[in-house]
Image 1 (spheres, rainbow, N blue to C red):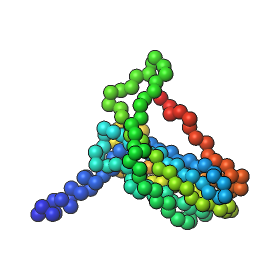
Image 2: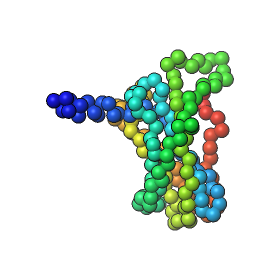
Image 3: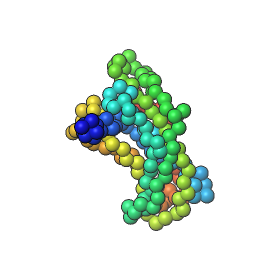
Image 4: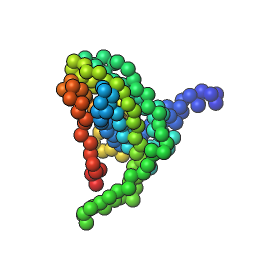
Length: 168
């Protein structure tokens, strides 16, 4: 009976209700090598306290035709786990006392030779933070973060744009 009830509770124990945002970008290193950077944000307070960052994070690399070519498995480096400190520059901004965001960054290098149509890179994770008001049923809604490396970007060894500062 204990085993049966444990199985019934497992979906509630294992849910990952903490993702609040993320971004992915790439830097051309030359010789068809690209540094892929994935940054994920999680809520410190709301959601399952046992839901942490993926270890490893799996980024799918797809051809332009949306065919999976391979998955880049990036181990989580706990040293890169940090809590964002809000920086507010205006007198009208106020940080609520119940806001806390952890962030982590995954980085890997992949070799992406020129390909007609380029590549799509994608990372997916369930589930979003329960305090999100503009998504219907965020606890059952996942998030996808991705980037497109176009054929022209491959041929020109271009890099994606990156934010220099976080918005308030």
